[in-house]
Image (cartoon, rainbow, N blue to C red):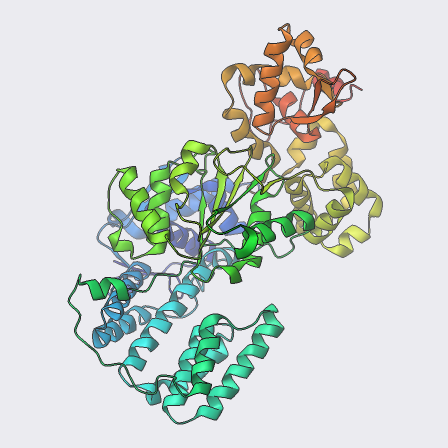
Amino acid sequence: MEFRVLGPVEVRRDGRRVAFSGAKLHTVLAALLVAREEVISDDRLCRLLWGWAPPATVSAQLYTYVSRLRKILGDDVLIDRRPPGYAMSIGNATLDLSEFEKLAISGREALIAEDFEKAGELLRGALARWNGLPFANATEYLADAEAPRLTEARAVTLEHRIAADLALGRHEQITGELTGLVAEFPLRERIRCQLMTALCRSGRQADAIHLYHHGRAVLADELGVNPGEELQATYRALLEGTLDRRPRPASAVRPGSRREVSARPAVTPAMLPPDTVDFTGREPELDLLCRALAPDAQGSGRPRRVLVTGMAGLGKTALAVHAAHRCQRHFPDGQLYADLRAPDGTPRHPTGVLRGLLRALGPADDVPATEDQDQLVRLYRERTRGRQLLIVLDNASGAAQLGPLLPNTPEPAVLVTGRTALPTVAGAHTVALAPLPPGDSLELLSAAAGPARVASAPGAATAIVEHCAGLPLALRIVGTRIAARPHCAPDRLARRLADPVTRLRELHSGDLDVHSSLLPSWRALDPEVRAVFPALAALGPRPFPAADAAMSLGLPETEAERLLEALADAALLEVSGADEWGQPCYLFHPLVRLFALSLGEGTAPGPGAAARTEHNRRLTHRP
């Protein structure tokens, strides 16, 4: 059996296409294939199928799609239910994506070894696996999530294949192809360099010079940046008459020799998630992050480590990713990204994270299949040493998890997000996020819902902003719901949010959910801290000192203060000034307080359990 995703999603048995229809069914199959036998959660499947507007019968429809796939694929393929989702094993079947990646890696290694004939053959074989736009017959949500990564891999493989052809003196044969590729990828500077080289070798220096100036104008217009070092160096060599006019001789290099190791070019990873198109606010914090990440932000020899902290839902990841995209020009050796939290909210072990980062740094085949963390750390630090990399480590839980992931040289910069301060990265560049002010909140709501929808109901928009209390996650959820219901007035949603008892239930859309985003922080608490959390919320919405908490809990003041500090460390409580005796006061974010009041006796109900008792209603309105 043969599976294809590099084009329309297809299944072929004995060379014949297996007939099945429907974008949703193709999406489920493609998502399971791309997961490579790892679990893909129900929430992610839901997002890939319906975006942010799922139907009420999500679970039943997912079950139906999986059942249909099992029937179509038969016993050769195993689809397991593994909470929180599904995983698929294709057995002896083939997947065009896996074959493409294997051939691309082998071709790159042959290129490094200067075996250009073999490299060209392997890389052409890899590119032959493509049959159009990835996931062409699946949903747009899947294509938006997965296709950019695969398209980038194809473009890099094209660059490698062209490098092999240039090394073999085939510049005249590929000039036409390169001209088309520059038109297709106008911002890829390496392809432009390759066409300049081919033109120069063909005696067309004037065309090569024009091509450089055109590229400089495109980069300025589209991105507001100057050409990178490689393009500038190619142009200087062209003007000086030193640009390579002839193919390099294919000298023999013994595998594993010193020359081969030294000639091996570093893989340039590009792992950043897509930037948030409608990113709003946070200009002071963004400016601080960009200055801290810039190469001259630290004195010589000092590592660049920046930490973004804050409670769940404040947009730490969005800010970090936006800053990373803005600072890409400072990191020509690439950008790494790792989410340090598993889909169920638990911290990921550093060993698994290290393997993923090492595969991105390449070659993937050189990553040892070992559980020896020290060995993986040594290889990781070897591959990051001396390289201008940006490493984004998202949702860090503590120093023990983070320590093995930090490079030991100053060249790579590290940007970390977490819900509390981390001694490993704390220092001059720690950015603690606060809730958005009303103006920025309204702007974010407008960006998510559509300016016209918000402008048509200014009173409702003001009320929504107040109920969301500056939490970007809540504002994005409400905006998404408004945008998904063009015939539903924002006033109705504003009225539903006005009731504190049902507010958390309303702050839910697809896999975006305020209640669920707070659960990992609550679950990570020590049992004694979890036990007092709802009782502390009953103290009301105003700041309170440890003495009030001690009286409410029936504990000594020092013990109450210890529990309060533990909640503050978990970003579930804020330190808000001091009382008249100089003692620190503590404050619940309004939505965190509703979350605390929603918790039962030692349990955490799901997102739909926001309808509370009248007692909780009275507590919520307590002055």
